[in-house]
Image 1 (cartoon, rainbow, N blue to C red):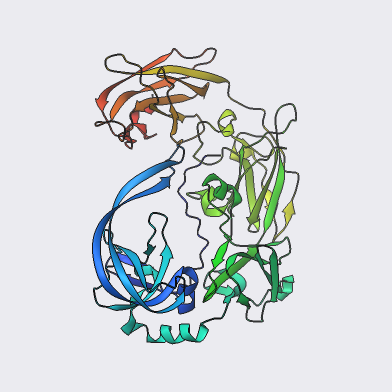
Image 2: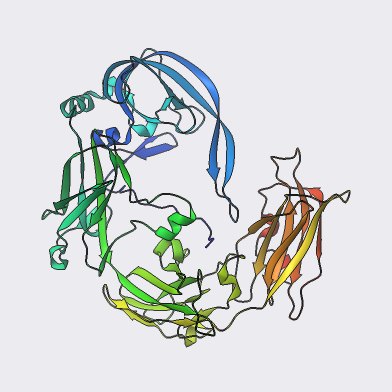
Length: 496
């Protein structure tokens, strides 16, 4: 499923710690052992030489409606040669090259001749190590206590500790844990699993943890869940690894907070008119207030995790619901991707109605499971196609050009922009649906041409009974490959 990627997977336990600020830059203050745990190299070193360089940095980005692509940018950095006076973790060399950022609000230049308590990490873009304001690196004059702690821990393995309780990060209450039988935490690594008891204050500690990648698992009944820990669908969509995983470097400590909350669940199936399963359609749960009206969220899927996709057999499971009443259905929010399976079906709520006023609310108790909430999707749009060609002003076909389109459906306020490419002859084809209006445009990629060119967007209504006439888009005006102003769904051209 493609959704607006407006969320951040916020799985770091940042509460109960404070922010350090330097001008416009801020970062999280951590304990010495935490700085050490995040680093690939920890040492005391003196800066004996400095130079400034401009690095070409490549990274992968996911544009709205597009596929992963490579982004290239220039970064101004300082490269410092440091003479290592005492090493705690990492390389045994006497000298080391380390880079720091100079071109951002978090610029962190090192001073020639100064000695630092350094925490450095490997870089994806250079063979040198990197450090910065938020890594913990500081002048040795300000690191006496840290140095003492690191010397005391030298040669010891890491610890993984934390706290479990009901509530939110930084405000965990462990008093109700035993009532629900929550007594243990597991530390799971590659080929190894350790288990520790949770103390009366909610804390746990694993000692002597070797280097490696781990995750924590609280042994919970089905009625409870770890809050905000991991959303498998979102992680898969963003092509990122399991956010429960963390690294242990062999020195220092890793601290985690594990907030617990109720795990109300609603399960069911999505079925077509013949009773067959429907796969990869988004199901949403909307809470209802005391007045019987839906409680709207700006981003219900990413803010509350109340959206899931149906599986191959049509089943869905919505987890982590608080006690209350919910409406269950598809197409309930104000966003739909143009090329997803959702776009074929009309708005449907349980038990198979088209409006919220006629829907049957589902009552979920504390940690309860409500089963067999099946939705039969019998109301769908008829599929059509928009075929077209993109040409330059002189009539030449425009091959491999971005065609972008957005739909205005009768039951939605806004849609996302979808991108496809023209073929070698400039042709493209878009699957569309009757009753919708589509804005379709094209733009060259600014990185492949001196001046990006844009075709004036066309608005096409898909009338019943036939495919629309073929579309011809002419790249005859200056544009930018990131200008979406013409594709604002509130644009007057989409209101006719």
